Amino acid sequence: MDRVQIAVVGAGTAGPELASLAEEVGKLLAERGATLVCGGLGGVMEAAARGAREAGGTTIGILPGESRTDANPWIEHAVATGIGHARNLAVAASAEAVIAVGGEWGTASEIALARKLGRPVVLVGPAPAIEGVSSRSRRCK
Amino acid sequence: MDRVQIAVVGAGTAGPELASLAEEVGKLLAERGATLVCGGLGGVMEAAARGAREAGGTTIGILPGESRTDANPWIEHAVATGIGHARNLAVAASAEAVIAVGGEWGTASEIALARKLGRPVVLVGPAPAIEGVSSRSRRCK
Amino acid sequence: MDRVQIAVVGAGTAGPELASLAEEVGKLLAERGATLVCGGLGGVMEAAARGAREAGGTTIGILPGESRTDANPWIEHAVATGIGHARNLAVAASAEAVIAVGGEWGTASEIALARKLGRPVVLVGPAPAIEGVSSRSRRCK
Amino acid sequence: MDRVQIAVVGAGTAGPELASLAEEVGKLLAERGATLVCGGLGGVMEAAARGAREAGGTTIGILPGESRTDANPWIEHAVATGIGHARNLAVAASAEAVIAVGGEWGTASEIALARKLGRPVVLVGPAPAIEGVSSRSRRCK
Image 1 (spheres, rainbow over the protein chains, first blue to last red):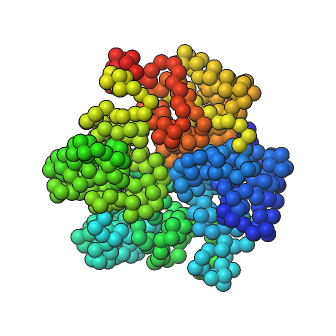
Image 2 (cartoon, rainbow over the protein chains, first blue to last red):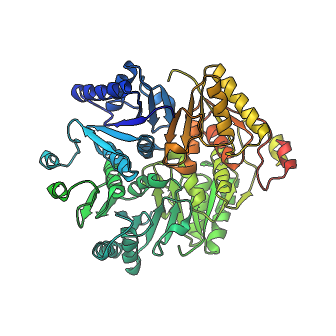
Image 3 (cartoon, rainbow over the protein chains, first blue to last red):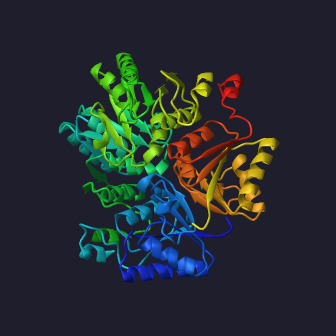
């Protein structure tokens, strides 16, 4: 445990704007010497990991499935948990703080579990696009 | 699987008002022939289970620990998962729908996981009392 | 928690002899008033649950997937854990004792986890048919 | 995923002989460029991680608890799963192969889960010292 570990969480698919934001977050974490922890798959997870690796950082992917080969190509150390969405707990628990870049219900569960464990959480980018919740409500937060 | 299973989620401690509400929810579910699923511990979980059992219903408690003895006295069938907060996924997945009675971060994670799995979620009672979020923000929802 | 809970573990496929043995175990447990806990799927799990239900007993299935519909038709109360093979821990933890009827590697993991938790384990039927271990070695046990 | 990941599993306490053996295994893995995966705690896990780090290797600890601070001092990247003994599945799934150095019931569960997932398993050192199983039986294997 030579370094601080920070989790970046967000949706498994990301448009160019969100991906660019996630990549920037990953880059900044790497430049500050933090290890990036994420869920290891695509979208925000992949963009953040790419940003970190291209800046010389270290990345850990905590996967839902039973095989390391599910990891995106920017994951340096892949943990295959085999426990599905329950791996969201491991993502939150393995970080000193959690940064959410956009996100949907899966991201919301990671934020809630992180707070349950007392980890600080920072939201960046657009409010989570949660199906069935109107943008008006979301703007209130 | 003779019956519909409905989860009631909420905080592990509950004042008299919230407990009374949870008990009523449990009672109504039992009267309609649904099996109550919950996290098996105290507070809202216990009050809902009491309401269900006193109305002749069946209750299943899905516990975080490794021992069935952690269950509240109104749990008829206790499953000790041994996986800590990750059991929140099992609570959500084991129900056709989830009813949240108040709640805090743990409840928020169950709501998010239930939505991730496509389960309908109903919130009753006061908005979740989430530490660090002002009541003004909460009222917006 | 009105009754003792006993787990029956074994392979997800079973020939007639093993199925008959598992069914008998389920029947005997039900006749003694124990609730049967199992992994909820086919083979030994299904045969044991059938034996228990046909004798008027109660059955709990603790499933690896995210949907209760995976349960065999003899499961009365299904818990969908969503955590894959890690649900083997929940099967072991939810029982006062574990009875293994034949079995393969999955069963072996349940036996080991049950012993780790201090639960008594009884093996009935043929020694586990473990691929890559010769029958000579198995006969030694 | 720049490197092969190999898991070393074994008991959380280890006498000098077993610790020396585990350390040697860790050292040899590091010298061949493999990343060491283990359960992150003491005994065999710590000795193997020490051997790997002292030989310039990389170590990943997959912990049962919710805090990275449980990791032994030789763990470079710690994943806190929060899922208790169910993390044994993640240890097995995260490795291309598993090497067991001695061990007890927890180790036996990791071996069984690894085989369930099709991972090759190698046993080194003394047969597992399993309480309640006579040494005569163990010698048979």
